[in-house]
Image 1 (cartoon, helix red, strand yellow):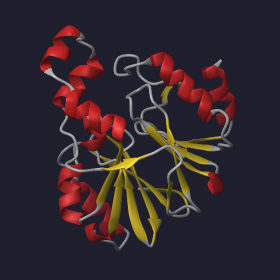
Image 2 (spheres, one colour; image 1 turned 180 degrees about the vertical axis):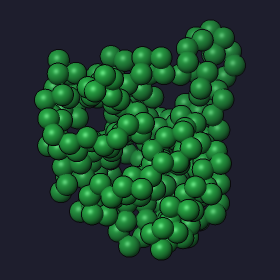
Image 3 (cartoon, helix red, strand yellow; image 1 turned 135 degrees about the vertical axis):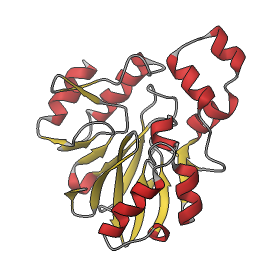
Image 4 (cartoon, helix red, strand yellow; image 1 turned 30 degrees about the horizontal axis):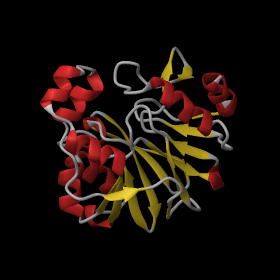
Length: 220
């Protein structure tokens, strides 16, 4: 467990990194693969907290290494689940016929992923508590409903899989699992307009310094 800034802890669940925003109540950002609940409970115990302290679960996008554990964690905590409607609809509407006609990795993953039961829709510009206010930034491309979380006070961005690190450099998302790379680049161009000093990734350690230059280079 790493405290990235006061009130934000990075934790490793099964399959990906997740984040705990502590504002008295807890917000969990991403829920790992199915089976992540015991590991999350262990992290919470180290903070002197429990599952029932989690008030909401924010999902950056609808891939199984980010939402697979949400069903069990929501059941144990009673937390509200939030995800962009575009990903909720994607998971509920994808069919085997579509996969056969368009056999891309993202389509196959959508078919095999179970959507949260009744998530509250996240919208671009929504504000969540903690870290002096956390803004939802809709960043489609990797998936239709991918979102980032921007804490302006700390100049910090939680990006899910919208960005990755390749050979030590901040890079666009995986070509294999991204549904629309051109749209993803346009989303990154939007992130480049934000005042960002620290980026928190789903599969890499957080990075600080030179972030805006790296984002502008990708966008260009």
